Amino acid sequence: QCNTRFTGKTTYSTGSKPRSLNAVDVNGDGKLDIIVANYGSNNVDVLLKIGNGSFAAQTTYPAGTGPAFVPAADVDGDGKPDIIVTNYGSKNIGVLLNTGNGTFAAQATYPAGTSPNVVVAVDVNGDGKPDIIVANYGSSNVGVLLNIGNGMFAAQAAYPAGTSPAAVAAADVDGDGKPDIIVANYGSKNVGVLLNIGNGTFASQATYPAGTSPVAVAATDVNGDNKLDIIVVNRFSNNVNVLLNIGNGTFAAQATYSTGSGPFFVAAADVNGDGKPDIIVANYGSNNIAVFLGYC
Image (tube, helix red, strand yellow):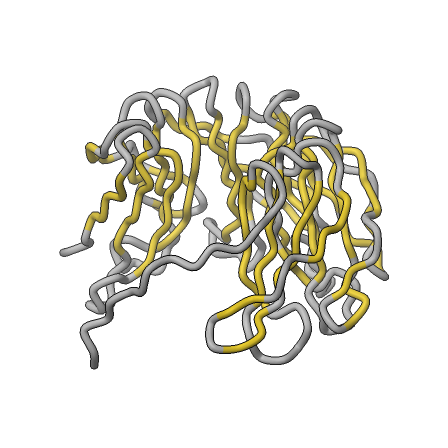
């Protein structure tokens, strides 16, 4: 074990206003490459890793207006990760199929709601193909686009959420083997849970109170009972809530922990190696990261 430190930064050019990124091996060489959503220049960059932690100059692919998030998933079943991008300003989702050697076809677009933001790719109907779940911030709903094969998707089914859903996560919260939807309803100060009722369809959301402007969610088993709990960060109440799963996909009232100013993102990981998930929060307003260590 070493006392890990980090070198000074190395910078790589991207487009304008890079909004989010993803690290995934897009060309099958066993090394992680970088995918970037450039919100200001309406494109997606791919930077291939060339060894020793360095990357080639970006290759740029056109996207829609205001690309926001870029998960990667093998949507056409060829064993290569494809790019999914939410085009916030053009109200659609782009899918760029991996054509080999780390190159991508032009995006195919699928209508979403208004201001599609956070998106996840997960198989919601058990057919072995990743589907798309998207939080449509401007139309206050969640869209589900089923994968119909060959990297193509059916028209979105829209499920009502709260006001201004900012983020979604997918997790099996009721233990039936099917992924359910968790949504942070930014404008209505709550978290919605939409249970998967089979064949890629979802029940109406059940809501649980959160703080002011819940902006990000994560799901993990925080208390070791083998049920997935919910962690939500509240941007303007400067705190994080933990909602414990009490069975059948229902949740108890939250425990609340203070964060820094303007928490904007949350992740759960065992950072101290004790086998219990810890909480990591990015505090947008106070320019720092808060780590909450889990304990019994």
